[in-house]
Image 1 (spheres, helix red, strand yellow):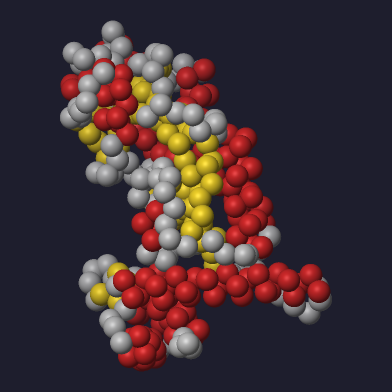
Image 2: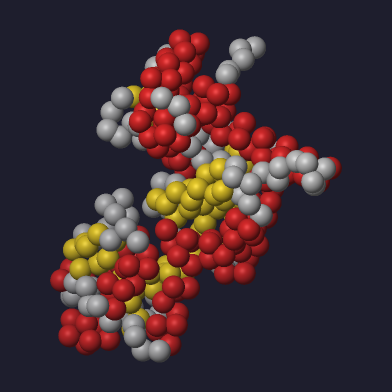
Length: 307
């Protein structure tokens, strides 16, 4: 069995996570030359290139495997620190400063996930929360850059386990003045193509799914505006940018106070969410999973959506 130098593995992780050799050197408090040497030695041992020198830098398949190993070592060190703290509270570390990375979709961050993760941060865990479209957060887990993700995908990756979180419900909303001027009869087959829809990015197709379901169509093409932040989308809709298909959790108060209106009454899109994580026996990973499951139980509906 090969022995992989943990210092070199941390170097690889720093290169990928910071996006460059110079920033990796700054994080590790070594010279850029030392970073290059450590990576070169690791690549020689692996017999393969581990990092594609592109903009941005990205790990190769072999690099992804070693990156995942580096993340698992971090998790094991954090578990050990917590266990030692229990045995010798005055002499052992608690795991503070140990970085654990997770990928969470933006709407969950804007509504329920931050509150769920707060106990971990208060316990001294240095979380790195990576945001992406909910259909693509699993790619971060596949690459080995995170230990878990919140995603719409149900099928677990090899070596991972999955648990249902519940369903997030979405409504189509607009500012009252905008709706009165452009959608006086509500969102329908005659006007949907004339109004812009707020989207997270070009990968985001939830708005098309909502309109297709509303109108009973197999496919629709929308006029889209892109704004990669859930709270910013709410403010943009309030400012009259167009229509937003947004989490009911996020717009509930604005609807009740008349700051937004539902432009498709009776239509709600439910999106099932799942928590995927490595299949490891780790107290920290169990705590992370439990806090997310509890937060989801309080805020999300049962997984019973009609997609």
